[in-house]
Image 1: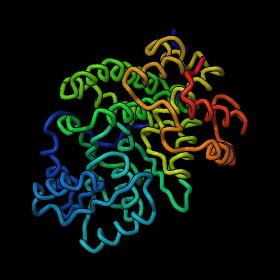
Image 2 (image 1 turned 45 degrees about the horizontal axis):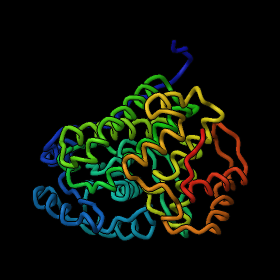
Image 3 (image 1 turned 60 degrees about the vertical axis):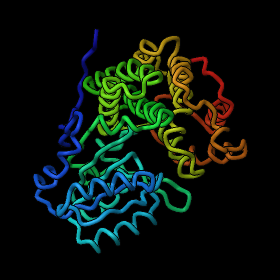
Length: 355
């Protein structure tokens, strides 16, 4: 039986359009928000898609900026701002994953313009008021209502071209949001329900995509799960897992989704030792134990399992452990530098967590 305690659940202000073919509605959303001069953002990898969207928008688009980069480097944001202001744009349209969405947020928080976001991965930045930026090898994160996008458009057709490896790592990245949401101090019953639903949807959809990556129903299911994970991320505080991922990403430029995927079983197992009841949904869905079940699932979907495969050395682990414990932050289990160093060692070697 669920024991009810006092909780706060804020409204979800972001407008969401979910379906197939919804990319066609971008122009209408620009106009609905009262704008007529959008700048389309993307990474170099998705530049052709950004240019195609800009062409479809016609006179509603005043240019593109296709240099978004992982971990949102401040120098890239500064270059984007020059282009944005030079084009006299009045809103941004971010087409892509976390790198592009992060750049759109960085522009918006500096200029107070509206954002329309079209996610093409499951990374989960789109529904949040969170911005992580990197400068001089340090990734810092902040929250501000001005960071949250006004409209998010989910088009499941766009995920059909998402490479299978990226599909799996991006999904585990998303699952990390809801795992931490389960033990967040500001969680509430709605967040817990969303977390369970998201994990179940990913557990059902991802194995199907392993053998049929063009299965549109499975793509819809996994994108729905991604939306739930992003919503959870946007309404609760994160803890040890995200701190470690930001440390490795900002300090060592490790791939964002891969880092999340590799660390997730280890951070979940570490915290499950202290709050097994809060992480029981993870065990119920993935089996065995929280950490072990997630590790098994990652192995099942051919996700990366070892930090050493990202190019990290054991000396890097020493530095990362120091960086991750410099500033105290909330986590359901207390830890010290040695605890983190051992967790990172296990993740570096790819050892299956016992808990």
